[in-house]
Amino acid sequence: MPNKLHIDERQAAWKVLLPARPENRILALGCCAEILCSLRRSFDCVDTLPVAGGKYAIVVLDCRSINCPSLRDLDSGTDIETLIVCLNADRQIKKKLKATGHCYVSHYAALPAAKPRIYIPLNTGRLRTKGLSFHSPGSLKARAGLLIARTLSSMGIKSHLMRNAVSIFSASEKISGGNSLVGWISGKIGYGISDLVVYAGSESERRKITALAIAEKGGADVVVKIADTAAGAEAVRQESAALDALESTSLSFQVPKLLFEEEWNGYVIQGQRAFSEDSRLQDACLTDAHFTFLAELSVLDRKFVSFRSTQFFQDLKRKLESIPADSLQPSVARAWYGVLKKNFADRKVLCHRIHGDFAPWNIRRQENGLFVYDWEDSLPEGLASTDALRFVYRQADLVGPWPGSATMLEKLREVGTRCFSEIDCVEREDYEKYLLAWLVKEYAENRSDRVAKMIEHVASEMQL
Image (cartoon, rainbow, N blue to C red; front, side, top):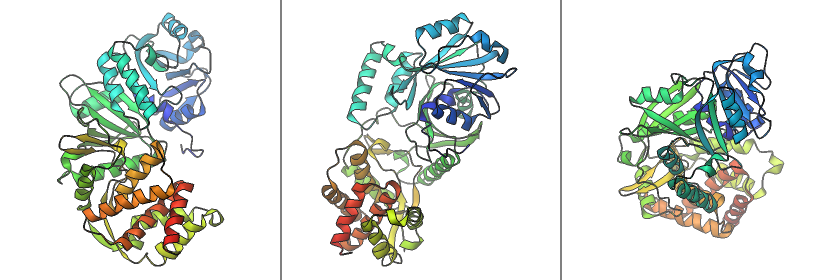
């Protein structure tokens, strides 16, 4: 089911925890449009009211929107294996569930409370610790909140995590795990998985759900990418191709090892070795280690081709053509038609393997260099220097502080020039065109006024 309204479905990422198949019938009571849209993407039949004679594998109750219904009223439509998923259930609702014979299975903290993006198992201290360490947010406020949560959890306190939780109950004391993702992953890797930490960080068209499969003692944790859309599946396969290509290079120890990629219950699933727990630190600024990594990456698939023939150019052309001509910023139009399309299109440009989303939150520092993950935007024919530009721009744009367009432009010029120097391509005039091309593409993707101002600066200097 396509998401034509671009609804943010991340708060239903917990659906991958459910031991159910696409054909199973789901009853969702009080659920918002975001949750309903996500459930209907994965299951063939999702009812919002009980249907007489309906057999439901899962009943989802969003307790923020409804009072807990009498489960006796649902008995005709449920059987002994039905799971009850309660969102934000209070003690009274949990008590009612237990009174009707539903046994507690598991709780998952949903963080942050306002717009949950990560779901952390709470059954044991070990699972909580793993879950609270899986994701490192970019903003200072989010990192401070996570630090407080970790500190309280280390003291055995979890009430703060229970306030906004996904709680799963079963009508049977034992539920079958044979059709669960946990059971399937265990079978793929050959050892037991205790539980999953579920994270949905992106709401883009190419989004996917990322899970940390926490191994039982003695095993190695596995990072699992789960795609429930065609665009997400394309992104997962693109990452698998990149990891395959990097496996036999000098960078193999600095990127994840691909374990498997298969389809399960309508999802495209990819498994990769989790990075070491010692590789936790992020750097907000580019360091020598970053430039060394990018220099080694630039050796892969390196070639000079006409700008017009690159995927970069074709993507840029397609995006610009989708923007109404009368809404295109004049400076952007001049840069595109005056330089990039007319004078630069047939010039030979340097292309090589790029990461595609080289940002601080996709990089960890380790003793022997960097560990770089999330390769779903990687291209074998990427425009030189764009990884370094993205690192600086995305950090300032999403985390801040934003330094102002003129200062930002100088920062981009500085890192881009050094990046070109590292890969033996130092012509300043050429670099200005690479930078301009990247800025126009960034504008085409996000329509940012900040980027438009930087393009205007460059266009003015180039007398366009």
